[in-house]
Image 1 (tube, helix red, strand yellow):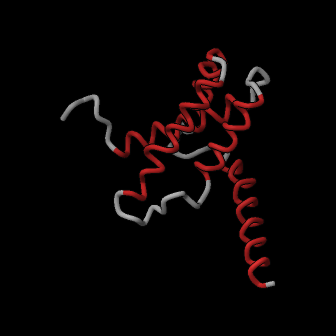
Image 2: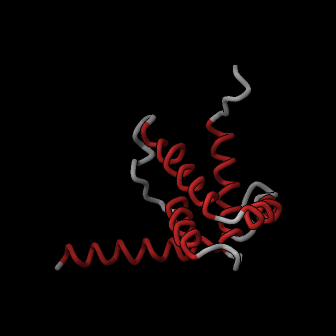
Image 3: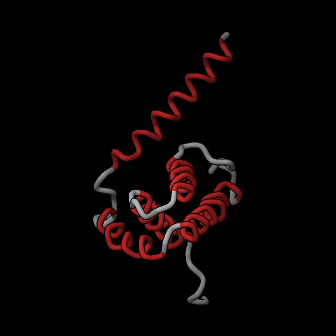
Length: 127
């Protein structure tokens, strides 16, 4: 097997690491507003329980995780100043040091947004 080819598990670990690094880079005051906007949308999509292509669909279900999310992250990286991106790398490694995030509560706003959105849809259907 070619060493340049990564397994699915390796790619997902890399995406997880870059998502954490992206979050840290977005907290910097040196990051432009448009990079922050796209970055928060990217992180929201990564943490969202809903995908463009549902994961239960064989093969196609993970395309968004392997194609769409890395494309969004790559675009964000291009918009973030290089020194900010590089400085956020070490802090991102610390977040996932034990295999799970130390600050899992950062997911709470995303969950609340989805609960609010689903509630709004249900109420709109009931009326």
